Structures are given as structure tokens and as C-alpha cells.
Image 1 (cartoon, helix red, strand yellow):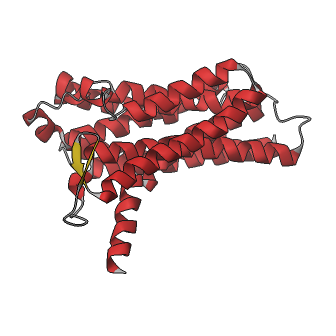
Image 2 (cartoon, rainbow, N blue to C red):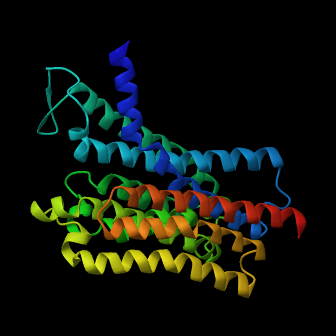
Length: 303
């Protein structure tokens, strides 16, 4: 029983459940953009609930699969040995738990693909392009033989794939057409995705530099990485203010500025290579995105 609890705990860690707010928010903002542009009008409520549900599942499955595959290639050192026996898998000696993490990650990505097939059926071939780009990107973050994280591309590609592309994908699954609305509406929240990746890389900066890991922060240096991180955090609130001024965001979206203390804590933590930078950046993303989503939902009913 104790071993089973340990396996469940380790699998929970491998999934990085609390990071799934990234996929949830980006997918949700694409749906909100579709509602804003009138694509819910005249549609069956029950069907739209079904459609929104499977779109959300596909988005979450895409990130969950990526997290598990990333853990297989980079995270096994976190766990105590699950047993003395190992097997040869993908040219490495791995425990059965490690293999399960990888296979389940692939399985969850296939779930996203299965949902994608239906979404392609109800839209067109461009949905296939968006979906394939997302799935390949999810695997290639740390999956062999691509491992674009070690090529210094982890931060920029995570921004594109988990931010604009994911919100555009959820929008396109409903609308069947392209628009700037889902990208723009999700842009402030999308800034927090590369910020989170930088906070993760900065925590391991000294170790990665020592072993020449090739991450973006190692390639461009800690000073420029810190500057980019601060710029992204500040950019979230500057862009929010601009959106409110031009009427793109509801005026009460300014409530999101209550998350500023967490942003300041994240900046201070990243400056000092502390693990708390990840935690505080995650909190900013969770609280900020939740507030903005709630503000839009309220505006739908009271405007």
C-alpha cells in the first residue's frame, strides 16, 4: 500500500498538475474570443457545452502529455528507485515507473489527437495544421531526438505553442476561421508562459551552465534572461491597462492588478536563482488569468 501511494504521488508530480493552468487559460481565452465574436449565437446549448468540453480536454491533454514526456527525459532523478529491476527502453536503463510515465504521456497525446480528428471533421484542414504543430511541439520540448529546450528554443517556442497557438486552436475549433481576437485576448496571459519557463531555467541556471545544457538562459546569460523576465512581467500589466483604455478588456479587469505583489516576489526570486520564482510566477498566472476570465464572463451577462 505504501509503495502504491508513493507511485501515485510520483505520477502526480510527473504530471505537474498545477502547471496545467497554462493550457486551461489559453484554451479558455480562445473560447471566450469565439463567444465575443458571436460564434455561439444560434447554436444548440447542449452541443456548445459538449464542444467546449472536448476542446478543453484536448488542450489539457496536450500539456499533460508534454509534462509526462518531459519528466521521462529529464525528471527521473527526482524520484527514489522504484525497485532494483530496470529494463532497456529507448536506449536507456529505466524503471518500470519511468516507462509507464512515458507510455502514458504518449497515450494522453493520442487522446488529444483523437479529439482533434473530430474537430478537423467539423472545420477544415487548417485545424489539422494547428493540431499537428501543437502535438509535435508538445513532444519535441524535451523528447528525443528534437529536444529544442537544449537548443535554446524552449522559452520562445513554449510562448508560441502554449499561448497564441493554443488559444487560436480552441477559437478555430469553434469558428472555423482565423482571427486576431483569440491571440490578442490571451496575449497578457501568454507573456507569463515564457516568464514561467525562464523562472524554471533560472532556478537551474548555475547547474545548467556548469554542464553546458544549452538552455536559452545559459546561451544568452543570466543578466539578459532576468531583463526579459522582468519585461514580460511588467508587460502583462502595461498591456492590460492599454486594453482597458481602448475598450478591449472590461474596465473591471483592472482588478487583476492585485496580483502585482506576487509578480514582485517572482522577480526578486528569479534575481536570486530561487525555486520560489516558479511558484510565484505560477500564482501570478493562475490569479491573473482567473480574474480576467471572470471579468469577461461577467461582461457577457451585464453588458
